[in-house]
Length: 256
Length: 353
Ligand SMILES: Cc1ncc(C[n+]2csc(CCOP(=O)(O)OP(=O)(O)O)c2C)c(N)n1
Ligand code: SF4
Ligand SMILES: [Mg+2]
Image 1 (cartoon, rainbow over the protein chains, first blue to last red):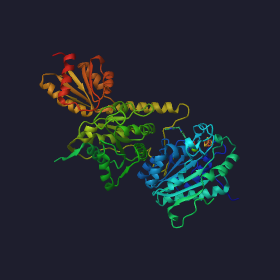
Image 2: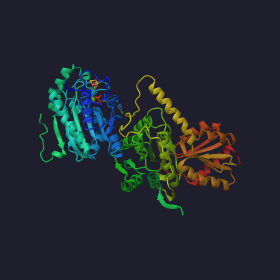
Image 3: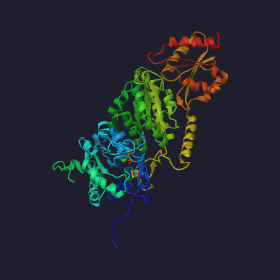
Image 4: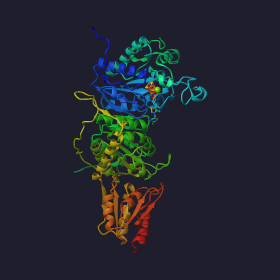
């Protein structure tokens, strides 16, 4: 019998700490698959952020460096400049990357650092118990927006992929989802490019994953997946926002 | 013929760093240390090094953390407000045991303060500075030559202890221009079996400061504590005219340098005065001071602050009641004559004439 699905070699065979239905686990697997496919396991240095993915090093069978909350892009800059032949990626949540780490990610992208950034947008601060994130949807109830996010005082969900796509140093910027098999297949292709571009030395590659947090959304995983489709995708359109290689024939960003 | 160059104190630091093999510099401009990034930006690219003008001091220190984790010799520099911003990263480096050299050409505070010399960052430098129970080695040069020499030394200490090392200077030490004798760096090879290089032919490595399982963090902190204790073997200080001294003036950095002149003037005035200058502010030369205080109990501590190092001196000596203090807030640099007057006052009070 042909084996059609197996754990990627770069993913350690241990039970994950993520809540049931959380997309972090799926995204970990997708990243590990690419590490395998590009044969990068012993060339990779992963930069972990602070959030529910802080234990990245328990799952990825690669060298890993912890970074302070929000600083992964600066840490990765130091690593990659010193070890240009290594494959360097960061894995950051939306609180980490789009709140406290906004300056670091913008300038890392703008310098065109040759790193790959995995950005997990679940519209909340998962690890600290579900507070508002910069990506929290208008009206969304969180533990610090008990009456729903009021855009008049708390601002609007921030669209990092669109912002980073405007920067000269960004080689690749795309947004994907993993809430259905169809979305997942698309996400794999996008992630592959984000890996390939670093391997080819093209510059900063960024993939935003629309992700679920059933626990803090107070939903079961099926409803959480549905929320990604019903609420998140319309506000955060999926697609490739920048691709230096395809610059001649621009793809429509909102191709979903 | 020794290779002698007439350079600014800040340049001497940059030159010492490059000589010691530093190939990565990350910084953000701030007066009075701009000659360091400027020198690095001009010289690193030509020798295969990397200079990044980062978006902030926060980014700089985290780039240092990243480069340090790969075993690279790397440096950042700033001045007081920027050093405050680096504290989170320094704490992470200490917790993760990542080496790196951080230069503080300090200026006056609090807040935006001013750009005049000050020694008001002594507490921040010697008590860790960021959160958590940790220490950084702190070197306090007092001449451009020492800026050069101690910067080389800083890289060795950082690698030996896998710990951040601070160089604490001030506006005067950064801007002063004087001859520096250049000499080749003679370091040794340090253990590199912890650095991140990609796990070719070995198990993956992990560098982190987070320890959540039962007892793990306690053990980690004890280990760090032992390391900080072991740094005492690298304590450095200068003794000047101590042999027959009845009063010992104690100061560090640029103030110690001015005091040296005052001490000579006091000697000419028939006062038996000597100078004790801590060069490592952490580890503080407490054992040496205690020993000296058994023989000579009278001290005058002089600082360009309202009193920080004086606490360490009082904790070190046998009889803290015999430690006089003269300090003043930033704004002006005391002249040798002014300090001579303070020496006279302390001498009359503690020794008599
Ligand atoms: C300087 C600092 N501030 C705050 C925190 C607390 N903190 C830890 S994780 C986190 C937010 C995590 O949210 P996100 O990045 O969205 O990751 P998620 O858990 O949702 O995957 C915060 C605020 C911290 N560790 N450090
Ligand atoms: S709190 Fe949310 S983001 Fe964190 S593991 Fe649970 S579901 Fe995932
Ligand atoms: Mg989040």
